[in-house]
Each structure stands twice: as C-alpha cells, then as structure tokens.
Image (tube, rainbow, N blue to C red; front, top):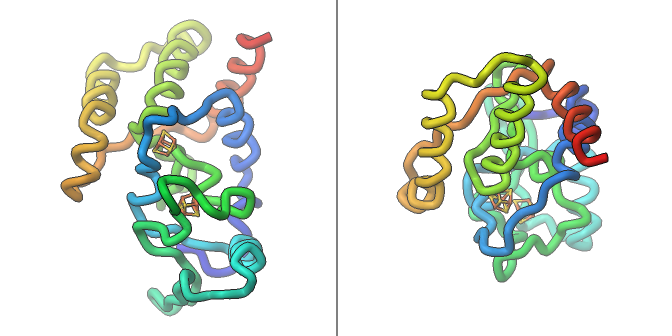
Length: 183
Ligand code: SF4
Ligand code: SF4
C-alpha cells in the first residue's frame, strides 16, 4: 500500500528500468501482469492517469486501508483494451517495474515467473555462476521453471503464484553485467 510519496523515488527504480531495457515481452503474452493484482498508485501516477483519461476518474478507486488513504486500479485493469495498455505512456510506476514487484521486506524484490521474468532469471543464473561464483541452488531453478510453466494456468484459476525473491543489493552489479555483456 502506498499513500503519499513517489514509488519512482525508490532507490532501486532506475536500476530496475535499466535491467528491463534489455528485455521485451513476447507478443504472445496476453498481458498477464495487467490481470494479476491491484495496482497501487502514488501521487505522480495519479496525476498522469488523470491527464491521460482527461480527468475522468471512474477507473481509479480511492481507498482507506489501515488508516492510510490511497488510490488504486483494480484488476482486470480497466485501461487494458484489446490486450494492450491504453495509457502506456502514462502507466503507473508499478506497471513500469513488472515483472519485478515490491513487497513488505525492504531489501528484496520479487520476480514474477512470466515469460519476461523467466528471461531475466536465466541471465541472473548465468551472472550468479560466472560473476558471483555462487550457483543458484538447483531446487530454486526448478521451482522457478515450474512456476513459469504453470504461470498462465495458475493465473486463470486464481491460484497463488510463487515468485523468486531477489536481493536488491545484487541488482546493481547484475545491471552492470548485462550492460557489459551486450557491449
Ligand atoms: S511483463 Fe510478463 S506478464 Fe507482463 S506482458 Fe510482459 S511477459 Fe507478459
Ligand atoms: S495501466 Fe496499463 S500496464 Fe498498468 S495494469 Fe493497466 S493496462 Fe496494464
């Protein structure tokens, strides 16, 4: 939940953006990330969405949870039209981070096992082997691959989707690794 403040000010936001710049979503993906969970909005997200929708606020919900008021959009996202984001240039910060997601633990991010998440994970395993010299345990790799294979089915059946937990501290050197590897 996010009331005041900007999610894009989170220290890892730019690192995540640079990592994501090396990947793209396959056209075959039916925008699963837009149907998974409510999207909490920060103040900047709200402003941009209001501008994008010419100040029509019917798609944005105002909530009060645990005494904190905030705004969100509920799933399936009402801005999803014919499988595409109709406000792509103005999409909220959390949408810009997918398949990474924040959680309650401050020093980690979650990685969803969608197609793009699986591509990132494959490179992360390689980075961990070659640079960190710390192999990701085989059972973690198996579990993520299984989650990836069953991702669409689980989402359709509203089953919980296991995600990978990544330490934020490891994302900065991973970003540099991707940059060098592609030089
Ligand atoms: S981020 Fe993942 S779930 Fe979302 S469109 Fe891309 S591949 Fe699909
Ligand atoms: S705003 Fe766009 S990217 Fe975000 S959940 Fe909705 S359709 Fe998807």
